[in-house]
Image (tube, rainbow, N blue to C red):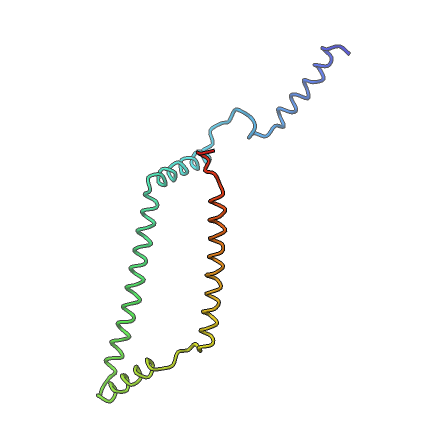
Length: 150
């Protein structure tokens, strides 16, 4: 078989491979509006991120929500406090409230001395472990030569 005959066999193969190649691998691409819109949106978002305006807007929104949450909580507490004060009709009622507060303040702690000692021991153990880890890290760091010196 001559060289010309081999080329005649390769031409149909070459045509088939070009036709079956995915469009993402082909060099020529026509305008696609949906892709262009996505790219424009991504470019705008990138600009917002670089300028910090998006972060500033989100920070302002979080700050506003936090202020509103605090205002709602304290408004409810104020309303509840006013209702309790308005419910006091006699000095006897006032004395009962004061006695109840005194009883709550003088109540024994809810944690026993044994439980307190156990928590203290656990904390002491964790502090010792952290100190050992810090010492190991310090030894490891001191043993290294900085890259600028080596």
